[in-house]
Length: 444
Image (tube, one colour):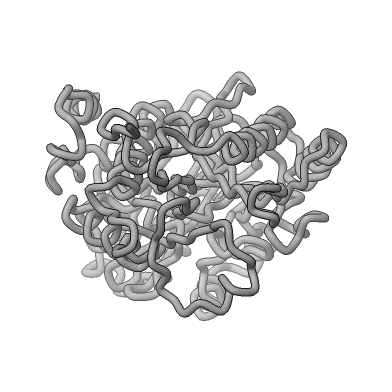
């Protein structure tokens, strides 16, 4: 907990983020990552293995062809698997500690202990087979998956070598660990949820700085200028991003004219801006979409009709998260939320996804932009406690003053906690960002 407190103390200093961004050094980040990993292995994984009925889980990768799961099991100073890295987790039964073994030339972090001496047994696969046979597990999980690429990291070659090395009587015990791998990836620990609000806060602060007159000069700045400002800002802060940001505009102009305009688009007074933006920090990801309005001469606030449109987006958020319930599938949540929204006069599109170790992470999928009737496979997966989601959706609304429809596209990261309550990790946008800020703009 020492380094988590260091993180909190650093980020909660009263200095303004935009002037004095405070991100942990690489060394401090590594300490936090390793502390969280060690804690998750001891407090999260045992319960998940027992819930899914596995007493052994094997995760293996060859260097440069890493299983998405193994990257979440390696210490911070390991950027990838080394040669062939084999990790074995064995449940020795209730009341006993889990056994964590590395069939490798050295320990893997603090928890996975070396269980192979090449001088004694030159064949790594034979050593793995010996470990399995000695422990005689009833159900062996490997990362083969139909619906989740996150959980499908075992290569065909390694699967064949595993079967070849094992006594055939053990073959029927080997099964897909898809649900276990998804559970491991989707479940957020208590320590992770100490730091996640600060990670989301950093993302929000960067968005606000980009959507300001420090970056945008109407009539000069283009949407691409703002996109690359975000990329440079991320780089300057020594953060990472898992996708290229996007910035777009909607304005009081016929769609036929607007869609023919060459990109990039110059930002003008009266424009409604939209950003899609995310960062990666301490192995956790964010995904956020927000709107800003460029004040016209004489305006001190966004027009009421745009404020009303944003409130419709917030209403759809409330409908969606109000339908979250333990063991309810993403497809059920989608269907119930769409029915409720349409009955209230909204025009909804819902495409919410898990967030965590990946941007589009493992867990239940609640719609996709082109699949509003449900998502086979990942949409049939049940909602679990202690999981995080990017509440991503849009509402189409008609703006009489512009004589056209617009879309309010919102995305905010939230958490479904162990008591079945949903909360936004660092709040959500309920007011349009105005440029320039009200506090610095005199409309007289």
